[in-house]
Length: 228
Ligand SMILES: [Zn+2]
Image (cartoon, rainbow, N blue to C red; front, side, top):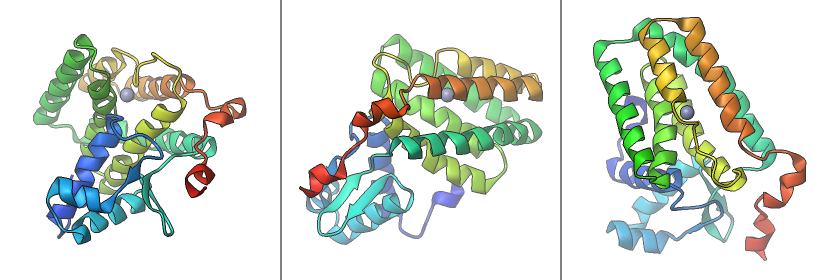
């Protein structure tokens, strides 16, 4: 993910580690991110943690509240639907790009990822399953040959994990089992239409497994509670 590398590797590494914690739901929507505690935990200056948090705020994963500090973002139902609308537009294009650009090593990486996902499911490691489910889509985006899509997906996938944390119906998996496997098989056989249709169904399944109707708005995070 070349595009994401910057001249500030230390802040990047902190931002990545926070992103991982969000993807594994170790950090949930609305959690406060204390700059001083982070500086201590990562053994860096507060300037570095501030830079990392600003990067995350730019990508929408973190929200900065005036005089209150930084919090893990908490997408509303409307924002959740917007994230899925964008993913529905981008991911068929990702499949087209992957099939046009695929290299032997990419196939190998996809199979390795599927094996890791399978292992996490066998161990019922829910945190790893959620993170790996998101990373599968980021991995495909990294192979599609379009850096702008890759960058956007690196933001949308962790945001999707926050949305799942807020609106999932208990005990539903992040990405239904086996669907990634079928998408990879269709990509491998070069069947573009089938792979696109499988991806569209897959995204539909994830969205449908969430409760995103207005009657569920009680689950929407209330920033007023933090602002007191
Ligand atoms: Zn998936």
